[in-house]
Length: 294
Ligand code: ADP
Image (cartoon, rainbow, N blue to C red; front, side, top):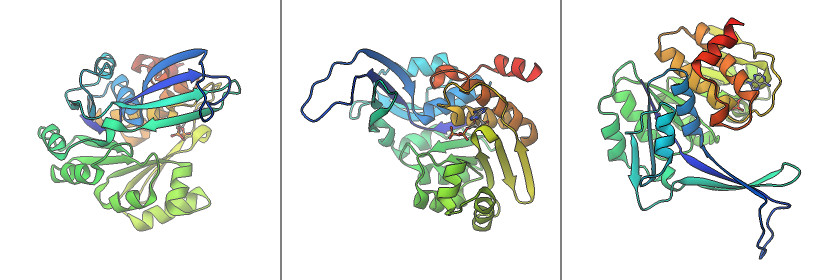
């Protein structure tokens, strides 16, 4: 099972002629509401991949994000409901040029309490994973708890916080970054140097680095696996990384070797970039099987 400690956000998208100016009231010409947040995206991807996923997070009472995640196959008993903080949300203005301007309110995502996490990880077992991104509080505490239970811990430091990530390294089994994050973290100007520096810093840590249209690589000690991206017509790369991560981890928990999990994740992410949106773009397991068999 994957316990994903992660954000749940409502993305409120407004189409506007121009970004709202100080003192101005602006009419929007179109509105859409999407469930998002890296946490929810990765839970959705892992569940669609066939993984058993418990999302640990926090929302406002009776938020419809719960039923939405349930429909996607995510176990939502780990999501705390409360009335002090609004569910995380983003106000997204999109202008006629397609540029955006965003206000993000973390709200409930950063209001998690340790007791809740302790109780949710109570029944976790040794072969289970704790997955985290950098959109909630209590990362150190949760990683420590998971380690005490013998679980494996994966961290996707998005958005990147260098000091926080470095301070967490010795509590992690797997660090998942894209190329920019790998270079930001290590100050390296190329990928090989970034990998070398990471491995010097944390020799036992496994690294999964996604490389956009160049694929991904996985390194642990002397072991290195690379996978190419599949050639597709990219429409929207939103949630490509989240899809990759969800599929990769779900494949590992299903018992696949890294060398088999990588092409599966790459296929799922390739399908996701051919479609618009975040969660709606994540393919089903069947779609990934069909794509790989073509
Ligand atoms: P993030 O979205 O987190 O920045 P990446 O850009 O590295 O992450 O993309 C994640 C994964 O999505 C890549 O490893 C690759 O498998 C897939 N991917 C991204 N862009 C493309 C593309 N243009 N064509 C095919 N696959 C892609």
